[in-house]
Length: 337
Length: 108
Image (cartoon, rainbow over all chains, first blue to last red; front, side, top):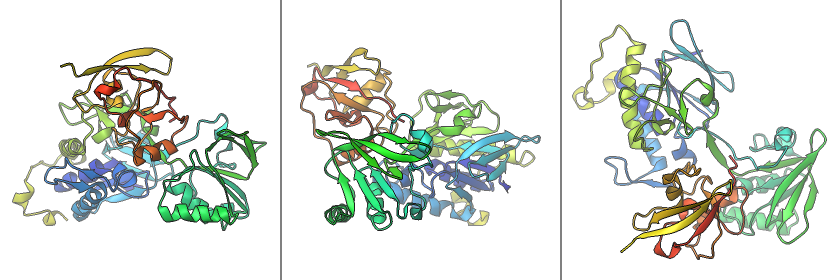
């Protein structure tokens, strides 16, 4: 069991900055995030996009902001549970919380700050009836172990980097690789696109464009997929695996079932006090919360985190006096390490 | 000078909504739909990084061509047709008066 003073769910910019503000109060933090790296949307979706509304930075790349936040919180040595998503929460007799991830990792803390942003990133699933029955039985949305596909017949769908990269890689592993794409052109890295076309010319990859997989079939395991091609008859391809690689999309996920008041996919908080939810000891900050006048801005998440940790401190150390100090007065954060 | 245009949005139940959209506020179609509380999520906030504002252009208007980012996103979306666009990439202009769009199925 991992024990900490403040458990933060979500390692995006708001979650990361929470570590800093909590650290100033000498609180230890631990973060859980479903993605394998910290940074949330900034690292996963738009690392190369510029942000213009961080005070003091006329422009900063999203990925760079994450790096800077990681540097800023380094002195406080936060713990991370990455690549796992928070699934359940239970309250202990002493008023603490135990949060368990999908992999069974348990975390205990007197307060929980949900900084979950848009939610857990999960693969986009094609809207095909009965598709879920074939999950893990031939249909995979993420390639975890490429060896699984050795000498198998694989169909890949998608036109982005991930679909192209795996097409190139699996061309040498699988017995047969077909790549199905909605359009004729691909928008991945140029050299990968060239490589895919080269493999298609060599007959190592079957390229099926202007097409999409519209049906899946099989007894208990996947046997075939049906492909709809523009201006042609439907094509049925026998295969052992279908990899629909359409990127990730965020959903609120299991947190939606934690007994918190939810409004339009966001957690309702009290913005007049400390961003508390309807459950005492559970706070929600950043894009995941809502209140009258809410703006989904990184800057607002930073503010919410700062206010919230003052209350979390009182829960973690009910007998200690809280004294607020400016970092300038403290001469940096070195003394808190 | 009136800077407003009239557009029609057909929702997923087939209901027609006539909306008045300003053309001088740099508003996009997703934002217009949200301001009228139509069921458009706009999850990513208008960065062409989700497809929750996916719609079909039903009128004959010539719109600004989709950017690479928008094409990338449409490649990952479902129910995509020839007239598919992301609402967040269509900025309201006087020429778009009379525009008619239909909201695509939600797939997430």
